[in-house]
Image (cartoon, rainbow, N blue to C red; front, side):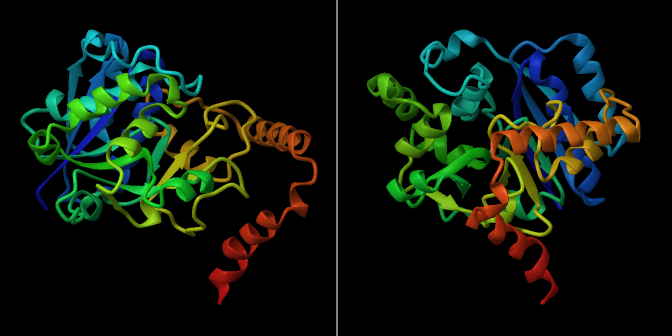
Length: 300
């Protein structure tokens, strides 16, 4: 297998979560996967960089830190979006110029874990389109645009993006529709590239915030994306796939070293919190659909 280029954007605040993404990729790579990581660095401390470099012990790879001048993203600083998104979320919009020597990358958000080799995803045929992504979990967005994708996992043909000057399109649209933007970089990408995005199989970005709220009921998802505010690193979260996150977090220098009793107590607190938030969740049709696809259908 040839080279696989992976890109992640982060600052110091999210560096430990970026490390979990990298650990999960390395843990599931094939022996001949030549992994090259490009970390778009929005202000990572030297200590955190040193810890990230320690991940090479899982599997030999190349880890490159690309220092970012935030002045390049002045057009995006005040875009209204979710409170948990920061400026590094917009770095992907200029990946083609920031990584000018690369032809293609897989871009990941920091709230993702990978459970398989990335070979097939990296070599996916985009049919000449600039990016590929998986349908977003929100049905209202797909009703407006059937090709609307989640921007947390993207295959990006950087050569195509450069050839068609798409970075300028993204910036121009942002400036022209500034007051309309509610979903940050994801909305910008989907509006500008409407009709020019290759839809990828759902297993490459299963978006999940709890047991019932999942974009796909893949039994063994290749990639899990922890969408919304219920991040797996938050105490008392109630995410169905959080055990995957714990598994890969334990491989990083940031491993929390919790006891089994502490984990059980945290899970109990998470259940209590979810019951308080949605006390009758088990009566919702979506809950029974999730039970069927998770436990019953795989037995057939």
